[in-house]
Length: 449
Image (cartoon, rainbow, N blue to C red):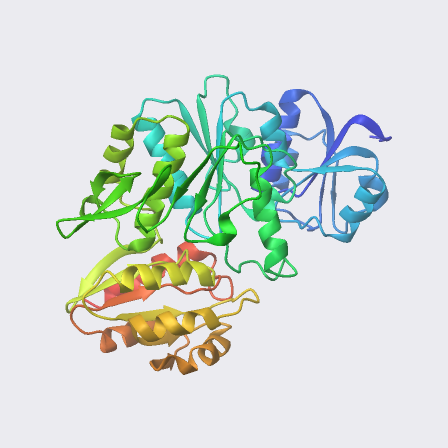
């Protein structure tokens, strides 16, 4: 069909999971649109042609003149806004948005918005389960599970959304009821010029937020907001007014709010200080939207965590094995090493390495030296990671397969130790995704028997 510039014409840029959700939404709305993708054969191309054969699709290098026929480009998270063709279209006055921006315009129920370099999937899932336990008709998704636009429904009472920095790049005004950036550490440095640019993308989540939740243990999580915006905080120190934290009574540690104990840490099914922090974050978010404390605490007692996030997979010869394959950046690995390392009688034997995404590994050296017996390195950036850990004073061993890594760990681990797969790297140099890496780790542990 012939296209001319129009206030009512949109182009979806990127035909993956979120791009296809945009297509479905625009079709339901009766909006005129086309699709473009930089790839010759994008993942959802056959689905699009089968379900929406009338929609024009252009694959390959982005055509600026074609993009400028639209009043708005709806860009999928996988494509950086800094892409030259998108920048040129924006310079010529074309609005750039994404699925989260569109979702925010049409959502009728309050939104709990969650981002962070680490733990956002765990906290999002936990808050969703808390809301369901409280009897709310809750919809959970975004970067996790169901795409945002597929969640829109008139009967939803609360949205709990996990959002990535990539999604937030194209989000102008989210207007969440409560928003949080759980933490900020180097990630996706192959997409951003540095930590400040990544930090700015994360903090777009606070635009229009009515309330905020801040991590006291991470200064980069605190937004620049007006004094009158209600602010709740969480952290592993003692709580105070409007603060969630930890209190100790009779030698036992408790989750607490203000000056009241809520639940002994020993009642949590998940291990480590980082999971205590996640529980406190979820309580703060739920409290901000009025979820009953009893329902939230009941949820914490039964929550076993998400797969591949410091997940216990087995015990061999007195050592426990944990799958933290989701630790695809340095911050996530730090949380697992420090959280689990402080929570066990013995030492950690760590498996790390993969595609480092341009990150600086030096922050791992001190905690590795404190908590680890040895580190088994594999993957593309194993050598670079080994150089960063050279001063940690622990044994470093290079292997070429995950099976060999697990076998090596079994030889090194002593009773009371924990073998921890927490790579601090992406998995795509050796595996389909972090889930496959975690599954193969569990299989290798099983094979030890």
